[in-house]
Length: 227
Image 1: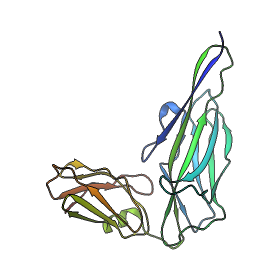
Image 2: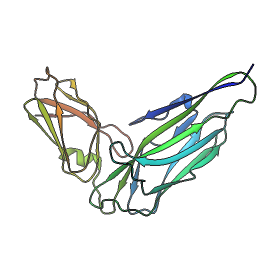
Image 3: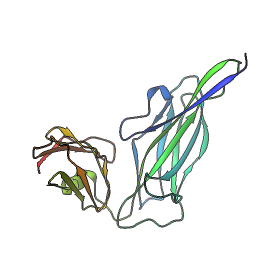
Image 4: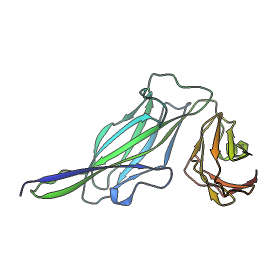
Protein backbone atom coordinates (compact mmCIF):
# COMPACT_ATOMS: atom_id res chain seq x y z
CA UNK A 1 0.00 0.00 0.00
CA UNK A 2 1.35 3.39 -0.96
CA UNK A 3 2.07 5.57 1.99
CA UNK A 4 -0.46 8.34 2.40
CA UNK A 5 0.22 11.03 4.90
CA UNK A 6 -2.26 13.70 5.83
CA UNK A 7 -0.95 16.70 7.69
CA UNK A 8 -3.58 18.63 9.56
CA UNK A 9 -2.69 22.01 11.04
CA UNK A 10 -4.92 23.30 13.79
CA UNK A 11 -4.67 26.83 15.15
CA UNK A 12 -5.89 27.16 18.72
CA UNK A 13 -6.46 30.69 19.93
CA UNK A 14 -6.27 30.44 23.69
CA UNK A 15 -7.34 33.20 26.00
CA UNK A 16 -7.36 30.97 29.02
CA UNK A 17 -6.86 27.33 29.93
CA UNK A 18 -4.03 25.10 28.70
CA UNK A 19 -3.29 23.46 25.41
CA UNK A 20 -5.49 20.45 24.61
CA UNK A 21 -4.53 17.25 26.42
CA UNK A 22 -4.59 15.32 23.16
CA UNK A 23 -1.83 17.53 21.72
CA UNK A 24 0.82 15.93 23.93
CA UNK A 25 2.21 19.36 24.76
CA UNK A 26 1.38 21.45 27.81
CA UNK A 27 2.31 25.13 27.78
CA UNK A 28 3.11 26.60 31.19
CA UNK A 29 0.97 29.70 30.89
CA UNK A 30 -1.94 31.27 29.06
CA UNK A 31 -0.15 34.55 28.42
CA UNK A 32 3.33 36.02 28.81
CA UNK A 33 4.06 39.37 30.46
CA UNK A 34 7.46 40.70 29.37
CA UNK A 35 8.46 43.49 31.75
CA UNK A 36 10.68 46.18 30.30
CA UNK A 37 13.00 46.09 33.30
CA UNK A 38 14.04 42.53 32.41
CA UNK A 39 16.51 41.38 29.77
CA UNK A 40 14.31 38.40 28.92
CA UNK A 41 11.36 36.30 30.04
CA UNK A 42 10.63 32.58 29.90
CA UNK A 43 7.87 30.08 29.21
CA UNK A 44 7.97 26.36 29.99
CA UNK A 45 6.76 23.68 27.57
CA UNK A 46 6.22 20.06 28.65
CA UNK A 47 5.85 16.93 26.53
CA UNK A 48 3.52 14.86 28.67
CA UNK A 49 3.56 11.91 26.28
CA UNK A 50 5.46 8.88 27.59
CA UNK A 51 6.47 7.54 24.17
CA UNK A 52 6.27 10.17 21.43
CA UNK A 53 8.87 12.91 20.84
CA UNK A 54 7.84 16.16 19.16
CA UNK A 55 9.53 18.74 17.01
CA UNK A 56 8.84 22.12 18.57
CA UNK A 57 8.73 25.35 16.55
CA UNK A 58 8.26 28.74 18.21
CA UNK A 59 7.99 32.27 16.84
CA UNK A 60 6.40 35.65 17.50
CA UNK A 61 4.20 37.54 15.06
CA UNK A 62 2.18 40.77 15.03
CA UNK A 63 -1.13 40.74 16.86
CA UNK A 64 -4.29 40.60 14.78
CA UNK A 65 -4.91 43.87 12.95
CA UNK A 66 -1.59 45.48 13.89
CA UNK A 67 0.30 45.41 10.61
CA UNK A 68 3.00 43.10 9.31
CA UNK A 69 6.18 44.59 10.80
CA UNK A 70 8.47 41.99 12.32
CA UNK A 71 8.17 42.06 16.13
CA UNK A 72 11.37 43.01 18.00
CA UNK A 73 11.58 39.69 19.82
CA UNK A 74 13.21 36.32 19.29
CA UNK A 75 12.52 32.96 20.91
CA UNK A 76 15.38 30.64 21.89
CA UNK A 77 15.43 27.94 20.73
CA UNK A 78 13.23 28.59 17.66
CA UNK A 79 13.31 24.88 16.76
CA UNK A 80 14.00 21.97 19.09
CA UNK A 81 13.20 18.32 19.75
CA UNK A 82 11.18 17.56 22.84
CA UNK A 83 11.67 14.02 24.09
CA UNK A 84 8.94 12.07 25.93
CA UNK A 85 8.29 13.53 29.39
CA UNK A 86 10.84 16.27 28.73
CA UNK A 87 10.31 19.88 29.76
CA UNK A 88 11.99 22.79 28.01
CA UNK A 89 12.18 26.44 28.98
CA UNK A 90 11.74 28.86 26.09
CA UNK A 91 13.63 32.12 26.42
CA UNK A 92 12.13 35.26 24.89
CA UNK A 93 14.56 38.10 24.20
CA UNK A 94 13.88 41.69 23.17
CA UNK A 95 15.85 42.62 20.04
CA UNK A 96 16.47 45.97 18.38
CA UNK A 97 13.33 47.88 17.58
CA UNK A 98 11.30 50.66 19.13
CA UNK A 99 8.03 50.11 20.98
CA UNK A 100 5.83 52.70 22.71
CA UNK A 101 7.17 53.50 26.18
CA UNK A 102 3.91 54.89 27.58
CA UNK A 103 1.74 51.80 27.06
CA UNK A 104 1.75 48.03 26.61
CA UNK A 105 2.20 46.38 23.23
CA UNK A 106 0.74 42.96 22.39
CA UNK A 107 1.92 40.19 20.06
CA UNK A 108 1.18 36.53 19.30
CA UNK A 109 3.55 33.88 20.64
CA UNK A 110 3.19 30.72 18.54
CA UNK A 111 4.12 27.21 19.67
CA UNK A 112 3.73 24.43 17.11
CA UNK A 113 4.40 20.79 17.96
CA UNK A 114 4.91 18.29 15.14
CA UNK A 115 4.81 14.51 15.73
CA UNK A 116 7.31 12.19 14.00
CA UNK A 117 6.58 10.77 10.54
CA UNK A 118 5.37 7.14 10.40
CA UNK A 119 8.02 4.48 9.81
CA UNK A 120 5.74 2.01 8.05
CA UNK A 121 3.67 2.03 4.90
CA UNK A 122 -0.02 2.79 5.16
CA UNK A 123 -2.44 5.56 5.91
CA UNK A 124 -1.52 7.82 8.76
CA UNK A 125 -3.05 10.96 10.21
CA UNK A 126 -0.38 13.29 11.53
CA UNK A 127 -1.58 16.28 13.52
CA UNK A 128 0.67 19.32 13.85
CA UNK A 129 -0.92 21.62 16.41
CA UNK A 130 -0.20 25.33 16.60
CA UNK A 131 -1.15 27.06 19.82
CA UNK A 132 -0.80 30.79 20.21
CA UNK A 133 -1.01 32.92 23.30
CA UNK A 134 -0.71 36.63 23.92
CA UNK A 135 2.68 38.17 24.62
CA UNK A 136 2.42 41.54 26.38
CA UNK A 137 5.39 43.91 26.40
CA UNK A 138 5.01 46.10 29.50
CA UNK A 139 7.50 49.00 29.42
CA UNK A 140 9.64 49.88 32.41
CA UNK A 141 7.89 52.20 34.82
CA UNK A 142 4.37 50.92 34.15
CA UNK A 143 3.24 49.30 37.39
CA UNK A 144 -0.49 49.06 36.68
CA UNK A 145 -2.07 45.64 37.20
CA UNK A 146 -5.27 44.30 35.60
CA UNK A 147 -6.92 44.01 39.01
CA UNK A 148 -6.60 47.76 39.62
CA UNK A 149 -6.82 48.90 36.00
CA UNK A 150 -10.18 47.14 35.60
CA UNK A 151 -11.65 49.41 38.27
CA UNK A 152 -10.81 52.43 36.13
CA UNK A 153 -12.56 51.24 32.97
CA UNK A 154 -15.51 53.46 32.10
CA UNK A 155 -18.72 51.97 30.69
CA UNK A 156 -21.47 54.22 29.38
CA UNK A 157 -24.69 53.47 27.56
CA UNK A 158 -25.42 55.83 24.67
CA UNK A 159 -28.67 54.87 23.00
CA UNK A 160 -28.15 51.51 21.31
CA UNK A 161 -24.39 51.55 21.88
CA UNK A 162 -22.17 50.68 24.83
CA UNK A 163 -19.13 52.97 25.00
CA UNK A 164 -16.10 51.49 26.78
CA UNK A 165 -13.02 53.54 27.68
CA UNK A 166 -9.74 52.22 29.06
CA UNK A 167 -7.79 55.17 30.52
CA UNK A 168 -4.88 52.99 31.64
CA UNK A 169 -1.57 52.07 29.90
CA UNK A 170 -2.22 48.31 29.91
CA UNK A 171 -4.55 45.97 28.04
CA UNK A 172 -7.68 44.92 29.91
CA UNK A 173 -8.62 41.34 29.04
CA UNK A 174 -12.28 40.62 29.76
CA UNK A 175 -14.68 37.71 29.59
CA UNK A 176 -18.43 37.15 29.94
CA UNK A 177 -19.42 40.77 29.34
CA UNK A 178 -23.20 41.07 29.49
CA UNK A 179 -25.98 43.63 29.89
CA UNK A 180 -28.79 42.16 31.97
CA UNK A 181 -27.56 38.70 31.02
CA UNK A 182 -27.37 39.46 27.28
CA UNK A 183 -23.81 38.58 26.17
CA UNK A 184 -21.62 41.04 24.27
CA UNK A 185 -18.66 40.30 22.01
CA UNK A 186 -15.65 41.79 23.77
CA UNK A 187 -12.34 40.16 24.73
CA UNK A 188 -9.77 42.93 25.17
CA UNK A 189 -9.62 46.71 25.57
CA UNK A 190 -6.43 48.35 24.35
CA UNK A 191 -4.55 50.98 26.38
CA UNK A 192 -6.03 54.49 26.16
CA UNK A 193 -8.69 53.23 23.77
CA UNK A 194 -12.43 53.80 23.45
CA UNK A 195 -14.73 51.20 21.88
CA UNK A 196 -18.34 51.33 20.77
CA UNK A 197 -20.27 48.07 20.98
CA UNK A 198 -23.74 47.58 19.55
CA UNK A 199 -26.19 46.42 22.19
CA UNK A 200 -28.64 43.58 21.48
CA UNK A 201 -32.12 44.82 20.65
CA UNK A 202 -33.53 43.14 23.75
CA UNK A 203 -30.82 44.48 26.09
CA UNK A 204 -33.06 47.05 27.74
CA UNK A 205 -31.67 46.91 31.25
CA UNK A 206 -28.99 49.00 32.89
CA UNK A 207 -26.91 46.42 34.73
CA UNK A 208 -23.50 45.45 33.35
CA UNK A 209 -21.59 42.35 34.47
CA UNK A 210 -18.12 41.22 33.41
CA UNK A 211 -14.91 39.56 34.56
CA UNK A 212 -11.31 40.63 34.06
CA UNK A 213 -8.34 38.30 33.54
CA UNK A 214 -5.16 38.71 35.58
CA UNK A 215 -1.53 38.54 34.42
CA UNK A 216 -1.58 34.87 35.43
CA UNK A 217 -4.77 33.98 33.57
CA UNK A 218 -6.99 33.96 36.67
CA UNK A 219 -10.58 35.11 36.18
CA UNK A 220 -11.92 37.65 38.66
CA UNK A 221 -15.23 37.48 40.47
CA UNK A 222 -18.10 39.03 38.55
CA UNK A 223 -17.95 42.81 38.42
CA UNK A 224 -21.41 44.40 38.48
CA UNK A 225 -22.15 48.04 37.87
CA UNK A 226 -24.99 50.25 36.67
CA UNK A 227 -24.94 51.88 33.25
